[in-house]
Amino acid sequence: MVAITSLRKDVIFAAVRGLYTEVAQHPERQYHVPTGREACGFVGYPDDRLTGLPASAIESFAGVGYPFAARVIRPGDTILDVGSGSGTDLLIAAQETGERGHLIGLDMTAAMVEKGKNSLAAANAMSVRVLEGNAEKIPLPDGSVDVVTSNGVFNLVPDKPAAFAEIHRVLRPGGRVQIADIAVGRPLSGECASDPKLWAECIVGATLTDEYHAMIEHAGFVHVEVLGQLDYFSASTSAATRSIAESFRACSFVLRAAKPPSAPLPAPLAWPPISSAARIHGDGGRTAQRPVEPAADTVLDGFGQTCGTIEPMMKVRMRTLESGQVLEVRVDDPGARLGVPAWSRLTGHALLATIEDDERRTRFFLRKR
Image (cartoon, rainbow, N blue to C red; front, top):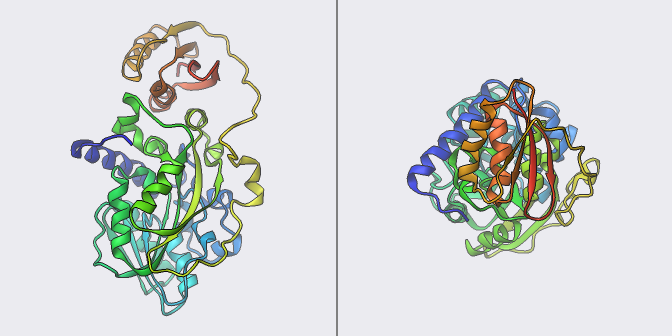
């Protein structure tokens, strides 16, 4: 885990708020992560669960899995949705709890809080309220909810142990957890892994699946179970984001757990969906063919350079190129595997190809905008 100072936390939170403010206010735009109804289908939401939901709830959906596959919600439950966004999961949870249920949304992005409230009003959901706040300090009393649900949030949280401790605190004894989130199969390290600007990528803040599992158990949960994994980033329209995900074997997963004392949980639903089965990371490996190597106009030899030094070098070298020309960047620093494609996305230069020559050496081909 990367150590995050309080100052960096503020910058991370600002970056995350910035991205999801855009998703809330401009759902028609294309983002580096899947959004909207198409994303719902890809991660496994059945069509009948979405029927009748307000368009405002679905259009800004940015979840990474289908947490309801956990089957831990019961009629009459009080539900907390951490990172409730535009309200999609709150409204689906309301379907499961029925008229006796109570639902609480929590989101750190003011634009999403507003949009979630509007979606709930449009659906005439009277027993739902939405609060502004973050997962590291949940503004609810001890033992006040039966189930915590969350979708694509904790990879964006700097202090995950604190967040999981907070979830444990607000749950009643026997309470349950259903989480969809992002994990990596190869640890992130180096300067880029601690760069707050890159946390909104949804990969930088992710941990190894086993470490995630261990953090949940350390927080005091039992019956911890990962239901499945999905190659979530294969649905991204950004070549840079797909490259980062491939380098670090990033995937989404659905997990469930319970706060003691708890009886065994019911049988879950099958997840991920069959339509996305070909995109599952069975062991984190891929069998894709080696990409075609573009012709480079110039080469930047970054072997031996760290992530923090390669980015200024790319900036200088790009200035020497004409629009449309191609820069080949060679790196062997693990952090640069993240930094180079992320830099290309943030600066608007097109990532044409990523070629891993071996476990250490990678070549990126960037076309100047």
